[in-house]
Image 1 (spheres, helix red, strand yellow):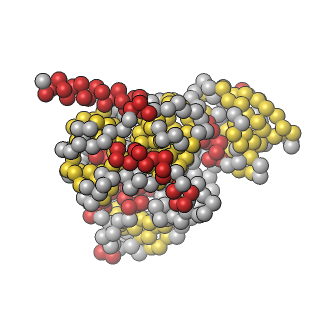
Image 2 (tube, rainbow, N blue to C red):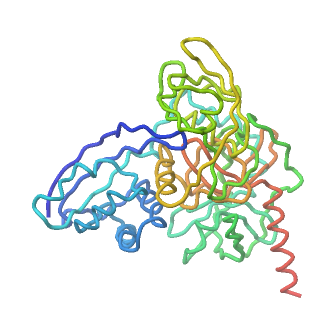
Image 3 (cartoon, rainbow, N blue to C red):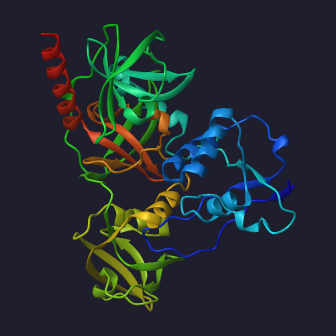
Length: 429
């Protein structure tokens, strides 16, 4: 067994605008007997996020690491090479391990900078004192927001939807748990069980044998891009704030909007370093060297902003692009085309979306969701999204990436709940 140490590094790569940059990490190759049984939650989330896309052998390796609560995974040389070259692999530095020397298995200890423990600075929107100023808005909703626990760990939030103890939450976080416990805002524990699932929307309804205060379905609100939204926690606090970004749309896998440029960040905008032939950018008249400064009036100063601006749209949508050419301001319109996301491309896209966030294990492929930018962790999905008038507009269903959280519109949740309750009554009768 080899003992090799690898430091953090950042890959210098260009990507099309559909891509994100890779997440930096620290890799340590060490003998298996030196591995400690300790698995940080950020690393566990990353492991769990890869499982569905790995082959059977590699998936078994990471499932075993999760079960044993260790960040160390041991590979044969052949397994290591498969994982290193798999597009779903989000970790850097593996190419620096020389697999030709010494022979034997390779044990890697994975470490990530902690996103959960990142210090929030005073000027940031998520600063605690700033959020505390909105607590009074969400206070009437707090009895309807619960924490869902399994093995003494929060796995989701839930939203009470009926006074008979029915609670809506995220199905993929609760449906394979042996034991579920609901903690209400008064700090009382309630055993719970899953009584309904809708796989398409990743919605589950769980039930506790207690009378709870449901949300007010009549307090839904009109929404528009740019309005502020709040995310309440069961403790009566606002834990996150953001803006409503994109109106309800499907995110089912398949066609995704594309502009068709290879971008580089420069002062004042994003420069087009290459244009793919016969794409939207080409037909709109953009050329190499143009600097994109805004899309639909939103300033563009980074590649990630360009990516997000395109992702807000669907294939066939028309966008307005402001750009500089030789220092002269110009404007053009582009009709976005599309490309298929499947196979290795889908894996690559999913991997790069992890930049600066911990996405939900089921983070996409929903029939109708709206998008906002309030940050949250996977275990905070299932709770309500509230406007500044205290009206619920939806239920958080997935953390998709650094600047994207998906929520199911409240009217869609209400429809699913009503269908379930009608069937439940019919069965009892």
